[in-house]
Each structure stands twice: as structure tokens, then as C-alpha cells.
Length: 546
Image: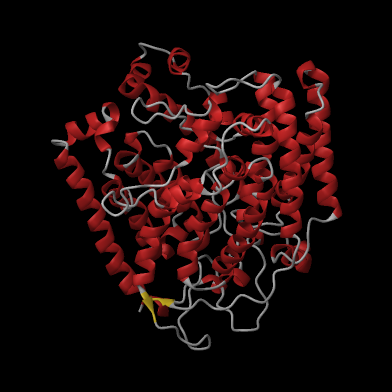
């Protein structure tokens, strides 16, 4: 994996790493072209929308790809391709902007655009061409009609989304409200890591040692019921430890970048052993992605090529892990040569199309929901699934009677009224995405209206990320990665998934950071932080370490 320093010629960018006084111009984007100049800064600041060339490139690319696909696959010669292509153009604007370096590499809007191009454009087409439908419910009469109607809803929503993003960002970034006391950060972080390790040790003792722990994680995961808070505490320490190492030795890591690769690999291995064994890919994938963004903000810039390589690795990991999740320890048979991956994929139903279309997209699910709601099937939740998500982790003694969750509402829509039965275990465990959950609660109009909170969230997340990237303070740099990733996950996740993500990936590190805050000093005399790098303009201000 190749990592590069921000700025032209591989040198550190002094406009990014230097401590700025109030009123000085905002620095250029890391890795942006020098010829872009003020235009790139205005685009990054959110004061202008996509330019004419970006519209032309996005429209031309989507039109060309769509035309080729329609010519070579007769199943795509259907009207649903028109709204699907429209969605591709609207969300593809951010992909083109990311390629043209108009966005920072981890800008939340750009990351959502990269996922959204697959979510809104590629996934519906792949469903038809691969004839892959991962649902165990009655399908619509014509899948392409259902996908087309859903694409129309999405296209309306994306128009609203682009309109919300076109408004200028008012005001300038204010300095962060508190300076991080780095010594206190090391102390509080070390205590948090120790608490996490202790919680992990308690798990091992509860299950009768390491062999018992492995047996429960791979074969008897029902035994983990009721242990959510303990698991969450145990699974939080690897990322906190990574952040401590990153801040403490950032100068060394900037000079010896191979160490960063080994740190990322070590984080992935430890995180897999601590939390990944119990059948959750997100317990490994998201901490590694957050760590990558931390490296980008704190130590040195990550190249787009490196991010694409990591993306391919993530998808392959999700595929292999899906086999492990369904087959358990039987996946070892593939390593021994007793079975092939194709055989195991066929037996478990875990193949690459399932990863691409059911794990990374919700096209078929949302199309079915829209079809049901258009015919008036199932009662509306009127926000009950959101309330159920917020109260998800409340202890039973505190909230014995819980509101209906998406399990109840979703099952009633997908399988029919009265189909939910907790005693017999009959319910639909599905993830619907922001548009799908909105339809469960508010009907057909929920799909396009869900893009309003999505657009507002992206605006706020971008503002916070730019603050983390541009300002010298460590506090926003440590908090921005989890908030940015959570914003991207909103597209394909339900609120309960976002709540669990924030509690597991944001709250632990954020608690350490907030407990380590010091009284804010004036900008003229207070300590500063610079991302370390090469050259006289990229040295770390060592006063922050005192």
C-alpha cells in the first residue's frame, strides 16, 4: 500500500500543517492541484456547486456505460434504466469531483458519493443482469418495474439532496472550544485501554478459558445474549490504543511509514480476535477505516490509490468473512484443501454478489417495501422504529416495556399483518437503509423526504471534517473520523445500526478526548499541532507535548 505526503512533489503542505492565526485564509485541500487555486478552495468550502465540466463528465460517463449495457443485455432494455441512470448522474457528480481532487480524500460527501454510485446506480443494474434477489419474501410481479419506481423516488430525493448541498456555508470555522492536554490524554487513554483489556479478560474467564471463548464465538453465539455492554467495552480498546500510539509517536511514524502499515495490520488482527470472531464484520472493518482516517488527519496524507486498494481488500474481507459467519470453523476446510471456496459459497449462500448487492446496497429490499406501501400493505410506524432504536441498549430493569422496533414493523410489511411472532422466532431481520426505514414509518413519501435529513447531516459532517483537517487542534482530528463514517453509513443503514456504531466506535474515544480537554488558550499564544512531515515547514510544534 503506497502512502504519500500532502502537497506537490511529495512534500508536506505548509498551508495544511501550519498553525493559523485568526483571520488567515483557510489552507488548500491536501493533495489538491495547485492550478485549482482559489476555485478548489471555494469548492471545498461548499460555496459553489459542481461546475459544468463535472456535470458533463458525470453525465457522459453514466450515459456511455448505460448505453453499452443496454446494447449487450436485452434484460436492461426497459424503462427502469432511465431513472436509474438519472440517479447515477446526480450522485456521480461527487465521484467525479473526488477524482478531480475537488474533495479531500475522506470528505464525507465524497465517500457517500462513492458508496452512492454503487447504491443507486450499479446495484439495481447488477440485480437484473445477475438475476440475484436476496429476499425470502414474495417478489413483485416485475422486478424491473419495482426497481424503476424506486429509482424515481431516489432521483427526486437526490435532487433535494443536491439542492441542500448547494447552499453556501455561512460563517467561518471558529477555533475548537478546548485544547487537548496530551499528557492527560495518554493517562486517560491508558486507563480506558486497561479497562477494555480487563473486560476482554472477563469474557475469557466467563467462558472457561481461551478454548471456551473461541467455542462460544464460533459455534454458540447465543450465549452472548445480554452481554452487549461488556462486549462493547472489550471491543473498544484496540482503536483507543491505536490513537494513543499515533499521537505519541507521530513524528516517528511520519518518517517510517512502513510502521503505519504494520500498525494497521496489527489493529485488524487484534480487532478481529476481540470482536470479529463473534460474527460481525463491522467489528473489524470500521475500526480499520477509522484508523486510516486518523492517519490521514494526524500523521500524513493517504493517497487515493491507497484508499482504492484498501477498498478492494475490505470487499474481499467481507466476502471471506461472510463464509466464516455462516460456516463457522468449517471455513478451515478450505485452508486444508478439503473443500473449495465455490462449494462453501454454494452451501452457505454467501457469494460475492451477496456482498455487493445485499451487504453494500438495498435496492431489492427498498423496491419491495415501496411496492408493498403503494398497495397499502402494513401499518405505518410513524417513527416508532426510530424510538425503538434509541432505546435499544437501555437495560431491561430501566425500560421493561420497549416500543416496537423495526423487527415488528418490517415483518408486518414484508410477511403480512400478524406475521410477527417473537415466541416462535418468526420475524424479518433486515436492514432497510435510510429510505427504507422512512417508508416503514411514513409510507411512499418517506423515501424522497429521507434525503432532507441526509443532506443536512452531510453538510454538518463536512463542516466538522474541514475543521479537523484545517485547524491545528487534535480534538476534532480525533473525533471527525467516526462522525464522518457514521454519516456515510446512514445511507445503507437503519437508525439502530447507527446507534450501535456510535456507541461502539465514537463514544469510547470521544469520552477519552473529552476527559483530556484542557482550558482553551488564546490563538496567539496557545499550543499548536501540526501534522508531521518533511522539511522546515512541516515540523511538529513540540510545545503541545509539554
